[in-house]
Image 1 (cartoon, rainbow, N blue to C red):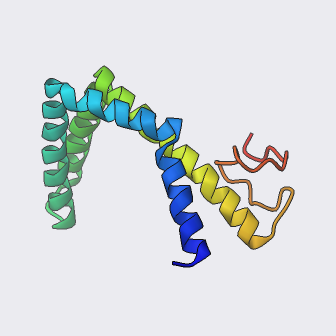
Image 2: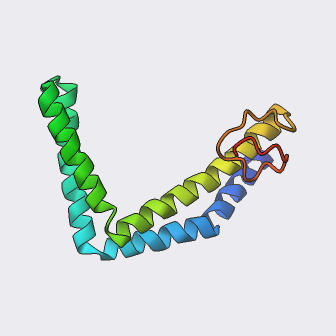
Amino acid sequence: MSIYLEKAKELGKLILESDAAKNMGDAAAIYDADKEAVEQFEAYKVCFQAFQKKLEANELSEETYKDESAKLNEMADKLKEYPAIAGIISAENEFNAFVSDIMDVLRVTIMGQTGNGCGGGSGCGGCGSGCHSNQ
């Protein structure tokens, strides 16, 4: 294996050992243990998938589309009331932001950009350039 692949594998392991990854694993375990939250989320997924199929088949009138969208939004809002679901969403967002920051640093390093040449993405936490373009 080349040194580049070895370093990529090493970085992947470091990411999996990060606090963000551990928090996501902990949140997933809490979610998995909350049977009511799991059942409610599964019910939401079934409704969402049925909605998507109808949408793809062009089987929804404008009124039905609005009604079913409202129902899905209401279900999603109720899901967020479950601490286990809110926790996993928060942990996933934290992990995704962490990985995005790493990808931004890789992209800036590979492209040879410095300063504010990064394009001002939302994940500037690891950049260190001081441009604060995401603020």
